Length: 446
Image (cartoon, rainbow, N blue to C red; front, top):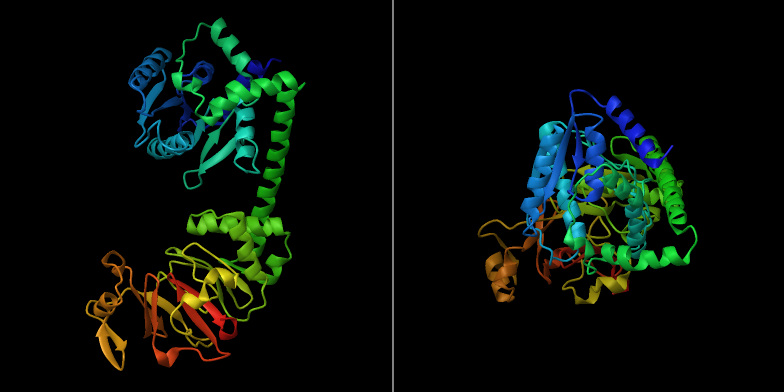
C-alpha cells in the first residue's frame, strides 16, 4: 500500500465517522500541499468547507483567493475567505504571528458554521523542519501532533492527516492528475528561518547522514508518544488530586517534579489563561514545599489567585479585590522571587506593616479627594503625589494600602508611605511594598 493510498483510506474513515450535520473544514493556502489535500477530500465527500486565509501581505493575495474560489466551484465544495488583520512581512517573527492569526480566524469561523475539525496539509518535510525549529527555540515538544485541540469550548480540533506523506509523493501525484497550484514567492526568501532550514541546512544533512529523514521522524514519533502519556497521566492525577479547585499539599508533593510542574501549568492555563516559564513553575513549587504556616500567594492576577493555604493548594477565582495578597510572601505583577537580593529591600521607605495570621491586606484605587494621615495632620493623596514629584502619568496608578479595611499607607511607582503606627519594629515580621509588590520580611535581613 502506497502512502497516498493509505492517506485516502484514512480520509475515507474520517469522513464516515464525521457527523452529517457538521462539515469538515480544510485549510487551503493554494500551494501544492493544500491543493493536493483538497483534491483528495473533494473526491471523497462534498461535505467540506474550504478555509482560505488571505494574509493581505502581498499584491497577489487577492488573485490567489480568487483562484481557490474558482477551483472550489469546479469541485462543488463551499469556499470561505478569511481575511487576516494587522500582518506585515516586515514584522518580527512573521511566521509565528501569521499562524496565531490563522488559528484565531479558524476558531471564529468554526463557531459560526458549527465546525469541529479543521484539516491541514502538513507533510513529512514540514514535520522535519518543525523538529529543527523547536530544537532551536529550546522546546521539548519536538514534534507536530497529529491532532491538536484548538478550542476546548468548541471541541475544535486541528487534524494533520498527511504527516507520513513526502513532498516528492505529493508533487508526483499533482503532476499525474494535472492539478494546478500556486507558487508562493515568499517560500524562497531565506530571511525566514523555516525557509533557510528547508533550502540550506536540511538538504546538507540529508546528503551527509544516511536515513536522516527516518531518524528525525522516529525521534518525533517517540516524543509524541511520551507527550501523549504524560498528558493523559497528568489529567488523571489532576482529577484525583483537585476537588473544587483545592488540592492537598502533601498529596501534590508526592508526585514527581515533572508532574507537579505540569499540574500547575495546566491550572494556570485553564484558570488564568496564562502559560508561565519553567523557572517560574519551579519557584512556585519551592513555595509549596516550604513549611510556612501562613497563607502564601503563588500567583495573582485580575482573574484570581493561586494560594497555599492551610495545607492546601487553593485556586481562588474572581478575586473581588483585584490585587488581593493575603498574608503573602510575594506580590507578583507576574514575577516571583525567593532571593532577598532581588527584592532590593533597602530601597523601600518604611519598615513594613505588622500583621497577624488573621489580617487581610490588599490595594485599592483612591477615592476622589481622599485624605490620609500625613505629618501629624492629613493631606489629599493628590497633594502628596504632587509633593513627592510622582510624574503625572504615574499618579493614576497610585493605590492605598488597606489592612483589615483600614487605610495604612500609600504607594505609587517606587514611592511607598506607611503610617508609623503600623510599621514593624525589630524582629517583627512585616510587609514591604516595592514597585507595587508586597514582600514579607524579618527586619534582621535588612
